[in-house]
Image (tube, rainbow, N blue to C red; front, side):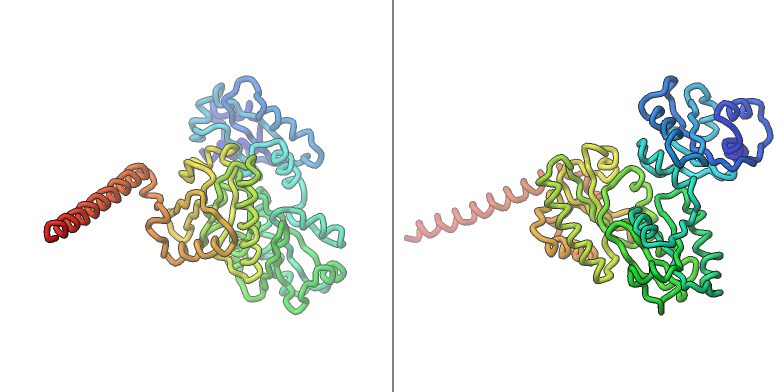
Length: 394
């Protein structure tokens, strides 16, 4: 099976099929191009396949070759790959195969190709360069002094560069800057250099690498690769486990076309998220999901109705989710109290339904109503007997 992966990088999908049939030996890839392969079951290209191939015509994608592989025609090869859920996309570089975790859209196909075609680390030399760099939703910059010290060189060569190369196929962008003009522009603390800072949408965290190891830098990037409030997509959904380890994730499941519903949740969640960022409280992550657009993701979270607030505890090996229904958020303080209660395992039993009881929701609700009715009947009977006894005594 490993040799098939190597073959993908070396040849077209057609050649791969012939090689698999003839049991050819691995052909090592000497091409400088990388491959993006879309496995599909469509004999005739549909909308997705057309957008995928059109991305190859976009400017800045020259290093990446876009290729289709028909699993209906060459089903035995896909069986050997154990490819069952279609469509599926693999990124292949230097004989290494990685799953494509971006969205299945023309814009993302193009941006992926452009990112693969650019240097793994962007050199930021001017203020204009920095302004362009920080527009990326997720971006990390290595800041060093103008004189490249041995400490900075060790950080760059052994840690930062290796991680940037490893994560080139992800949505995370990496940059390097040692220009005093740019550092003064964003008020970088020279006493803390060399350091790594996160830039991007509403994010700005300091990280002094001189006190940390490669593992700490990796953890930092994983723990801070999301913005304070993001819109959930299929690509992001695949990154949640690694990116939210040790956190609570508050997800508002909404219909984005309902502006009243969307504004109520997004405004309060973002306000709280920014406040927590300023106080360096990293326990909570916030997200929004457009349920009508991504019903499959809503189903994975077992969010059967919307609007609904779902809180997932990623501190546990087995995800533990809580469902708060249409939590009528009036201000961020209410949401903060709710999250703190969840963090401290102090959730009122009448306020939430744990994930393992979600499937029995109807039975629990009916049972609760019957219990209340029984209590009322017994109470009424008790009062009636007291009243009757009093009348007889009179």
